Length: 498
Image (cartoon, rainbow, N blue to C red; front, side, top):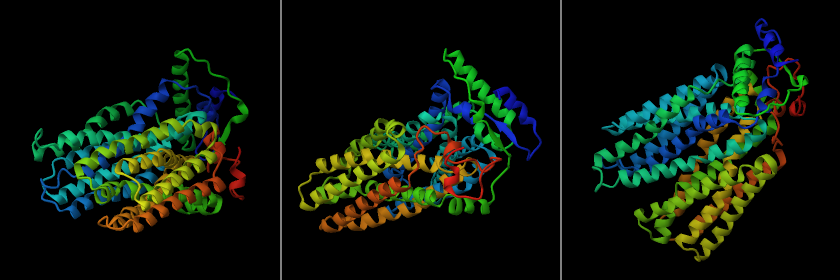
C-alpha cells in the first residue's frame, strides 16, 4: 500500500476502519528544520515555567502590595494549584479536541494572565491571575508533551523530550538574572521593577505563539479522530520540505499500515480500564517516577536557601548567587545525558540517574551531619546530585507520555502530574520544619536520607517495571485504543508489538 492509497481510504464513513501509514512515515523522517521548529515552538513552555517560579520566589511585590511572608508563600501555592487544575482540565480537552488547539489556547491564557498580574494593586488580584497563569502552564504540560512525542521521530524522541523538559532551569536562570536588575531599587523604582519582571514571560511568549501557528496538528491524533486525509496532507508537506533540504526518504513498508476505527473521545470508564486493567504496572511506574522526583525536587529546591542561611550563615543576597551553579547542573544534565536514553536505553538510564542522584545526596547527608561541608562544597554536591536527578526527572515526563495509548496520552500526563504536584508539595513543608533555626543537624540529615531513599526507590521501580521504549514507535509501545484488530482481552503483554 502506498501513502496515496492510504489517503484514499480516509474518505471512509465514520466508525469504519481506516488504514494508515502516517505513524510509520513520521518515524522514518530524518532530522530536519521542521523538527527544530517543533522544539523551539513547543519547548519554550518549560522555560516560561522556570521564569514564573523564579519570579514568585523573588517576591519583589511583597512590600509594594503590603504582603506578609505567609501571603507571599500563598501566592506560590496558588500558582501551583492552578497548574494542577489546568493540567486536569486541559488534559482531557487535549485528547478530545487536539494538540494544536490546546497548545495555542493554553499559551494564550498564560500570556494574558501573567501580563494582567503585573498590574496587581492588591493581593487578591495577584492571587486570581497567578492561579489563571498556573492553569495555562499546567495545560501546557499535557498538550506540549503529547505533541512533541507524536511529532518527533522515534529514534530522537528520548533525547529531545528530556532536553526540552530540562530547559525549565534555563528559564529559572533568566528569571533570576532579570530579578537581580529589576528588583534593584537603585536602578528601577520599587513599585515598577516587579511589574516589568512579570512581563518577561509574556514578551517571549508573543513570538512563540506566532511560531506555533505554523506547527501542524499531530497527524497521529488526526488519524484516530477520522481526519486521515488531513493527516496525509500534513505528512506530505513535511516530507516535501525534507526533500527540499536535499535529504532522501526511505520507502515505507506497507505492512506497517495500521487499521484504525476513529472515535471522538474516551470515556472515564475506558480510562479506568486502561490505567488499572490493561496497564497496571505502567500506571504504578508512572506514578512512582513522577512522585519520587517531585518530592526530591520540591524538598531541596524550596529549602536550599534556608540551609545556606541557617547552617552556613549567608545573608539572602549571598544565597541568590548559589542558585546559578545549582540551576546550571540541572540544565546541563538533561542536555548531556539525554542522548543516552536513546542509545543505552530508557530502563538502564532511568535507574542509573535516579540511583546516582540519590547516592550523591546520601553521601552529602553524612558529610553534612559531620559538619565538614561549607556552603561551597554543599552546593557542589547539590549540583552533582541534580545533574543526574534533572535528567531522571525529565525522563519521568517522557515515560508517562510514551507508555500509554495515544487517545489517553494527554490525560495520563495530566493525572500523574497532578498527583506528583500534590504529593511533592509535602516536601517543602517537611524540610522547612527539619531545617528549623539551623541549631541541630540531625533532623535535616534524616530528611536527606529520606529524600535519597525515595529517589533510589523510584530508580528500582523503573528497573523492574520500566518499558524499553527507545527507538520504538509510539504505536509499538502502546497500541491505539482505536486500532481495529487490537487485542482487548489481554493486558500489557498483548500491546508490546503491533
